[in-house]
Image (cartoon, helix red, strand yellow):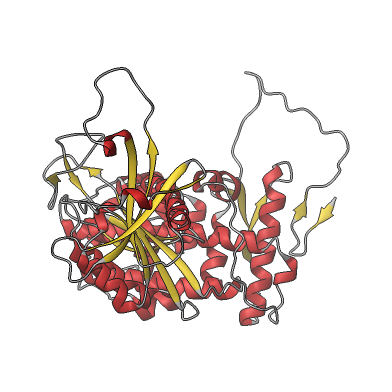
Length: 468
């Protein structure tokens, strides 16, 4: 039997294991220890201490007028824990009121009633939503420093999604909703970092299509939410985000950009098409109506497959054309190939929806906006946990003298798979040696990896604060 550094037992070669046989006659009973299905929450507790989450929260969170008996930190942490473990609605608190690991993390014997969290969420508004973005930004700086990650250039992908709502919800409108046509929706905008897949910023929005001014407001937020090591930003978005105001915002901050053409209809010279691979590429300078000056547009086209029927009147109808506006000076096929990596934002939005983005907890728009930011903060906590898990596999990067790196190791599994590997590990909580301790089963193959990761967090905590 192998023993880990912190005294826990690790699975090793135990000889032939006895097969478990369960029948209708199998005896059953109770044990005195407290059991939990969320043994991986201990890693989140260690992560919170490592990045000084409580201190950051106290510095940046703008407290609402309503006082909370548990304090604002534990109330918000309770909402984050609910989302972190995979429960999407406040009503699900009823299933966690006596959960050992959740109650131990919040240092209570029993969670407050569900209505307490409802009332607290109703007391939050737009100032609290903005402060949660600052909390997330401060945590990002800590995590990147711990991972030795200091990129000089980042790529930000912007996209929106449609949330179908039912009932009388403030801000809901009948707008673009391909899966539920004609039903009222909310339409949040989300900005993700392409390399680390983190949520950078965004907002819950009314159901109307986003305007160029709203896009500009999001772009102007980037600088304050990024670590100081980032010197240049490239912004990518589809045709919904193109507009002279959004382009001016990029220029004001010194960002490069590539947007889909949207309603702009540039004219490309027929003689300018150049074949590269299977596609043809072209570029031109074009000034759409309402723009102060012309910009560079690049395009690619592919001939449609011939089908029987009436011939097209215009030659352009024989091609499928894609056009983009950009200020990059590279060749058109490089610009479009770089833009195509933006497709990675779609699965990130899908993961955010499964994290709780689709849950609309209140009729009040402001409460829904705060809940949106809470969902994305819980989403980022998972991302940061995965970043550190990937970094723990690089023993040569633990040295403080190692130079900062431009690339980062990011585990490929989705958050749903990460829950199975890092969170849903059964554990037993017992009181021993005048303190509580968490024990994992040596028969669970995930226990060894989880305990290695916990040991890594303890080591980094000791390096950072001198306290294990």
